[in-house]
Length: 401
Image (cartoon, rainbow, N blue to C red; front, side, top):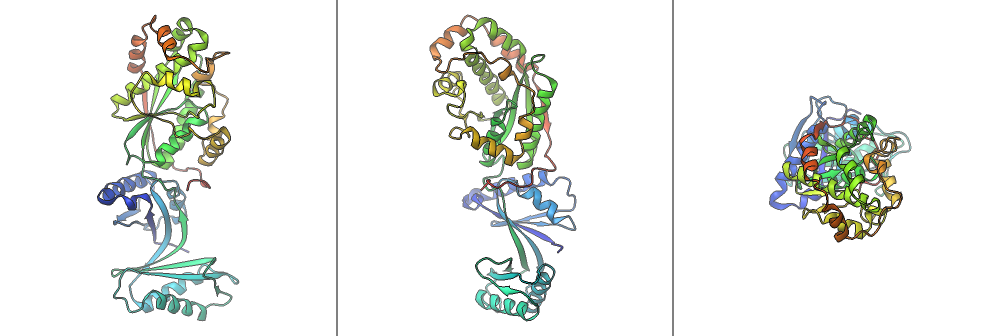
């Protein structure tokens, strides 16, 4: 069946009161970015929903992308007709005839926004349902679990008949809640952290630390691909690639081996924080999960965090590795993350890292070396690229809601 419209329903946006319009406009902008190659779609929005006028575009292809845009609670395929009883009856019957098969069940649900319409909701359900039963064979009513659920929305200007309610990704529109820098290594965890941050309305800019010749161009490409995969959930993402070789080499020379990881993380955080400040961000996001590795004990986090007063967001803090892997598979980043190209964190991992480092000790070790010139040099030569909205995000996400 050919659909003319897709009706989008809001979730949390509906609770935003006076700020609702801002959230709706942000969602519209994100949808337009994700749909950038669908030239004929037109967008209409009100306080309680958004309508995509397809103008001949493939409804199934559009729906595949809508499923992953944060801020959408659900959406439905729709056709439109005049607000006239006989016209509605003809359209309802025609729509059902085009999609049902013998043995199917159906249900009619009417919403009467136009209160002056001649029948109330119960009368309308009975009228349309009876008309369909009289003019079809092998189709019966099931009000609890129907194969076809036809919703009729009666408005003064027009009536919409909707089918196939689809769940959206929920959450809030990306970039409706401010900007934060995502520290992305190329592993499994940080892209998942970025996904959850975006779901809560954050605009993210990714920061990757690159240490050639110890890490390869393929490792950098892996990070590019991970960030590109995340664009399917809300639009373009900026990626900052920070040259980190000199800094890591100096850490290996000047800092005791068991504290080198702590020093590395502290310097990475300082650089990410300076990039945040330069790009008007308000927080830094990491993929840390409490206790997962040596640098993610509470003592390590305390020692590392001491270099900044900026909020550090850890969306995965209470998740275990199995949960993170499952989510990575669902959002399409897992197969990219496991490509066998190591990042600078794994290359320089000490054999026996300190799991409970003391802040005072790492500050003491660092006091003998001036890292500031290397920090400024890294910032000066940081490469920044923009990853454009991905055209074909992963198609099924069972655990977004």
